[in-house]
Length: 306
Image 1: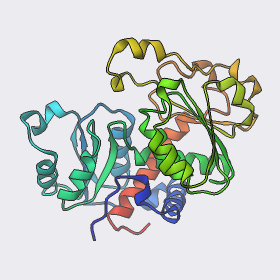
Image 2: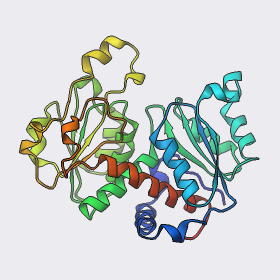
Image 3: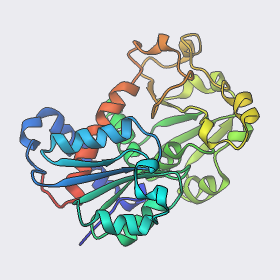
Image 4: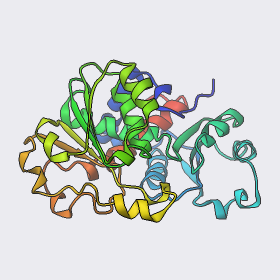
């Protein structure tokens, strides 16, 4: 039966942990996986700019021995002629075995999944969801902390439009003992429906604040995000809020020695480059772990045993 990944909740916690174990095995034994997808093709349909996600999907498929068909912008596809997402999905199903789709419209990958005859992976839809980034985040937390429960996680920056934040909150809300600290300017607070339908529904303790310094000593994980220019309707608001939180060595003075700093990237200026060599900085490792988790996911959705 065809199975897609549109939302992180499409996967059970057991399945996520299985994929983390597969990712760890790929890191240890890359050769064992080098022909797992031989003869298979991934269609990377990216209708919105992307560097890391697109390249990590492509690298994942190549390292599994498969091939990639790529669309790197809406302008270079029939979408520019007005072709619907549903029709695109049907057509691409004729040429590939699995689709990874990024789209500026929320819900577009779901429409694709409903019309494709092959699995579809949501590689980011608008300000909504980014489940494969969440898999990278979960893998990073598991490797850095050795657990996915009993953690105090600070989410900092753009919590309103940050699809990576929304997906990770959904994932971590399913583990016991986790506590969230939501750090943002009031205009970029986490949407009420996520607080109500995810955090409160799962009885997760949370605090909302505008001060990063105040809560820094409590954090096991700090998940930084950029203020996303592309999600703003007017430049004035963006310019006013873009420098709200900039992580510097000074601000880390009160942090725990075993803090893990994550960021889905790209970074603009919200993490000082002076922090890049701090052992607590995990964001470049996080990008690497994302490739291994995407390899595990591609195999899972194609029904290929590790």
